[in-house]
Image (cartoon, rainbow, N blue to C red; front, side, top):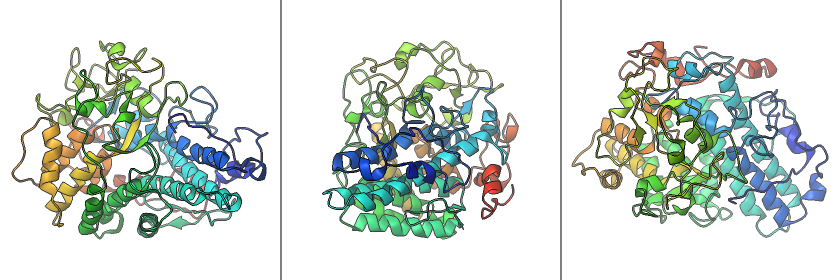
Length: 517
């Protein structure tokens, strides 16, 4: 699946992509494509069709970075799924600022976005395009896959991919339009409450985990969904249950984590080469070797799977100033992303995860628009573990590790501190040990939050973490330019959720806006 192939199952697929949202105005990529009854006649073709659902996380469209985006009316690069996830999860926090003047991009860090924000609409559209693509695959597979040996497994994989998209929906937007494979194509969807979506996701994931169709953890090959991926999503759902439903579920989370900790995953502690540390291996151009730790990755390939989002964005946008692009394995930098001094201060010099560029950069951010204000990231690189660059300098081979075992260990630590029965301190110290830091004899919640920041930065968990710990919108913790004030200030609590885009509320009268907007 490193080189992802695809087919378009039918024109019905293209029609259904707008069904969940109302006005995505999806442009059919190939009007001459075979209809499903002619195209989906073999297991090879069905597997390729499933690959197109995976591809929705990796690229902006089916024809590469320079081809037409799958969603018309939106910039292909800025509307790519992982890039949108980064905008919402990292630019809104202490982890990252972006210095560009692209439309409303600075509003994310200033935390003053509005209901007609283009970037919010782009990510919203991507989420529900993924849901719709998974729904349509399930429909077509049920219709034309009878008798194919692995069809139930393919359907189960699509359900996991749909759950990933719905997780980002519940986490970022709360009350959202809902449709599954039983929905009538073209029907205007109803809005589901955050609590009800939580219940649906819990039931769906438990069914996948307890059923026989989905491959066992680590049993489906790198980059494909299996029961380990389903358990990880369920653990995240339980971890944030207090936010989503008002009722915490720390022990339920701990129980799922215990299963994951017995599923054969482990921290990647032995470097693949002599140039980089074991931690750095996880973010290099051949990080597909790190199957011990990476539970699920969105795959990138500088030749076959190209995009101006995902890790291409993380690497190019983090490079500028006096940085040498060759050290990152790329042709040039875009000069955009840096971190705040408050986040950088969480690291010590001895921490192996302290992967920031400081030469010629000032620590304080006097001007978000000036790249030399703030230290730059050097975590992700288009360099292989042997020190050689990826296949191309213009597009990267580095996969995006959406789910890692280190996160499992840190979730276990949090659950223990919050009262659940699980060996969390030992798990916490495993992560510390790989980073070259001394073991802790005891931990409090702030220790866990800070360790999560150091371990998982740029991996799109920070906003969710800060909300769960009560530090996202409040004045309990501020960073430079939070609330559009250099010293930082608290903002209204309603910004713990993003608004439902105006255009979709106008297209679907069933959608009620989130409170405060």
